[in-house]
Length: 191
Image 1 (cartoon, helix red, strand yellow):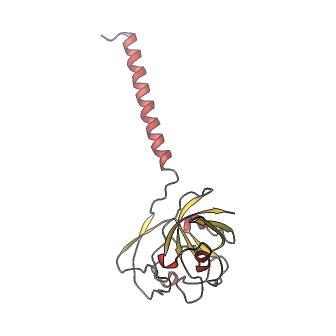
Image 2 (cartoon, helix red, strand yellow):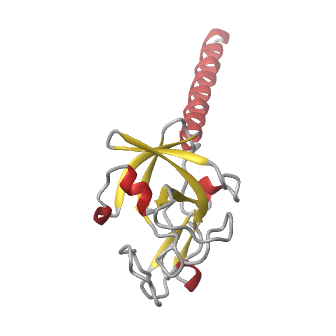
Image 3 (cartoon, rainbow, N blue to C red):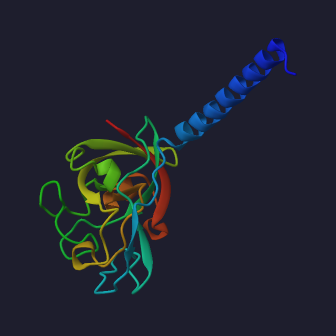
């Protein structure tokens, strides 16, 4: 026979156990906030990929991840800098989305991954890019499309990863980076 005191102790133990379980579950959910996972996959289709800056070109049948989000923007957002020409006829594809224009390789301009581009909300904004102890300001003029790709509009390149700052040669030069490397870890922040 269970006494009232034993029943109360068991009830208290059960309440503590359930609370702890709920707390752990909540922490798992909170830890998942800010995580950006692939929202789908795009089947690759090869085509006429202009190779002036050694881009990755789509391969037939290969599956490429698509992202509608990017990691949260902070005071020092970690990203990967890639090289892109915004000039007509080069690897950047069509005109820049923000102003429907092409830009000289001498201009300090960038395209941001889809989530960071935020439906054109950052068009015309200047961002500060830092790498290897150097910093430069560049103007956001385009989206590095993280959803679409492997078509003529995107130079038959796959969708961008969710953490890309695609920069003109002028940005690379201002940071003192070797363009032949093609990808460099950076941080960026809004002006």
